[in-house]
Picture 1 (tube, rainbow, N blue to C red):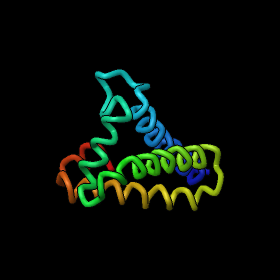
Picture 2 (picture 1 turned 90 degrees about the horizontal axis):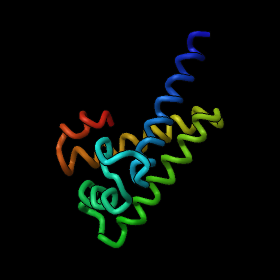
Picture 3 (picture 1 turned 180 degrees about the horizontal axis):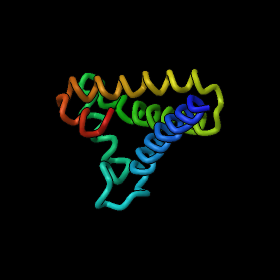
Length: 114
């Protein structure tokens, strides 16, 4: 029973983290608590942490990341293929963490808990 509760809380916390980031990109959080606050600021940050990508790819990467976070969060929340989406979530977070580390250093990765 305890393992099920732990897994449930892990699924919920990862899902809420993803959904909160997505909400921030679309301006649902107030400016005082936002990291980006709008889509254009998010794309600017996406370009910053992916300097090796051509500028024409940044919007596509932003859309893919946002879609992945939304789909992964919903699937984890409803319990659909949880092991599969948990693994994908871990891979996505690892990619974010590595991109941030190689572009802006380790400190922001630790600040954002990636």
